[in-house]
Amino acid sequence: MRLKLRVFGVPLHPLLVHFPIAFWLAVPVLDIAALLAGPAPWWILAKGATILGIVIGAAAIAAGLLEYLQPSLAGIDLKLAARHGIRTTLAWCVFTARIVVAALLPLAGWSMTVCLALDLIGCTLLVQGVYFGTRQVYQQLEEE
Image (cartoon, rainbow, N blue to C red; front, side, top):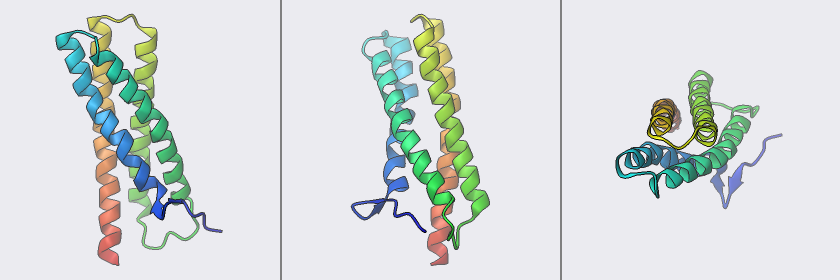
């Protein structure tokens, strides 16, 4: 049985993925602003964007995994899809770790720098995942 993962006729996974991508790519910029201009309001905005990305990202990962596990994946490069899923899930884990670190460490320049380092690692994984996901989509379009 094939699940219909759609909202208003739009596939759920591609609908959701844009939000964590946008939020998480903004987080390093907000953290740099917090380091240079002081924490308020940049640090709170960075934490909020990270949390929103984590929540929506979890839904996007779940939808993507359900699509990956569908029995009829004709034309899908499963190896490329797996690379996409692994990179984006690792990015999700890094941003989740970033929120834990931000919650546990005192607010100081060094702790914001640690969070910025985690942001950059997460963004690197995210960009790799986006690349693999984009390749997946365009390979499917070329085969149609």
